[in-house]
Image 1: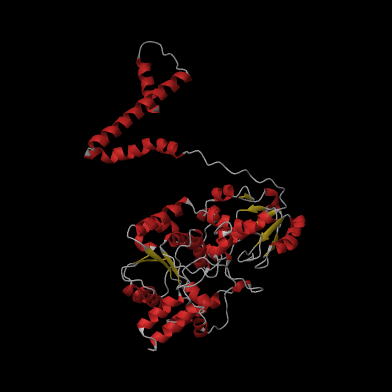
Image 2 (image 1 turned 135 degrees about the horizontal axis):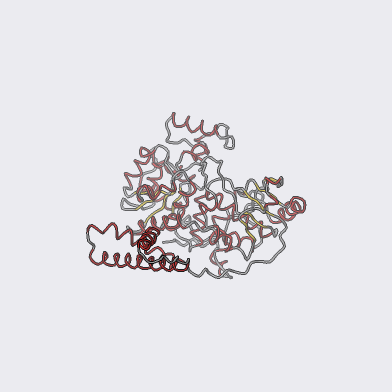
Length: 502
């Protein structure tokens, strides 16, 4: 535009008449008119290109179309935001910083707990920090996995949440918060009597460990329901994760019903648990050395055979193939592997794939470039598996870790969707009897199916064990307080309710 104006100016200087200097308004008017004329020509060119698609102009018109449509796209995208609930008005007793530890689902449960603690103690919660130092070494921040604005806004009627501490409480200004881990499996009395008084002196507390820091049972109903609200409504994945997760679900559903198999036969799980059944001597030694390399994992000798007999090991891929077949799944069953890299790779998946050739995983359903942004971010990859597992027709975990428990709870919340909770202790007995020839295949099928008749995710009450919270049913696997309303809950959760789920 500048060149055009200058050329006109030069031609004017060659005229014999005296040159009249242009005002800024005139220059601005010329530029605006020129811009309008140019954009009109471009839009017309696009219209002609869309009608006739001339070969030589196809690339040009496509690029121009992108440019000319950009303002329209932005205009359409600007929608009226949903009305916010009124913010809860309270005097904050201090600021709570939390550093979550563990994998995605362990951190997810911890975030729910910490929101409940902040609400109960009238605190201001800082957006949680995610674990970056564990085995997975995932550098993801909260905003890389969850929609921060939705998290803050959807809970504003309960608790005040801020993205970062005020500057006066920043470490670089010399302020040192009190750092501590709260006691595991604690109830509201502990937080009221032991934690709240600390804020009168320190103003800022930093919980540096958050896994399982609230009790499963015995908490006020409003706190239990708040934990559910955070889990099921406030913790929304980012648009990037949701878009790709929904695409995976759409691809799978387009081919019919599918099973999400959480095959927890991954290197970290085997090393941590000390379970080496089916591994070579070299693999067993590799897993042992890996466990010793991480000081926060157990560094003692582990009897793998004993643990397996107690049902404390994940099923191997070979064992899983037999169990799925006995449960009635056939070769046409579409199975999505909701897990990371299986230890031993395709060699260990061979038996499972032979029985169920319709095995897929996100790496086979999506193009490499679609997953590129999630590579080396284990929590973001786990979020994709979480979405697919929740949406599946049947969910089957081969180990009861954090993901298995939270997916189970989520599926209960969505209407008790079919979740087959494998009885590994009983299955190990049956598998060994079948392998040594004392249990024929037909009897093996009957025994496996009868052992799981009441383990299909039906409604039931959470198991409570006084003074043994680790042995109780986990709140997030069966948040019974949030699954129904009114007196009908007693009938729904009665011990005799063992109706089969489709």
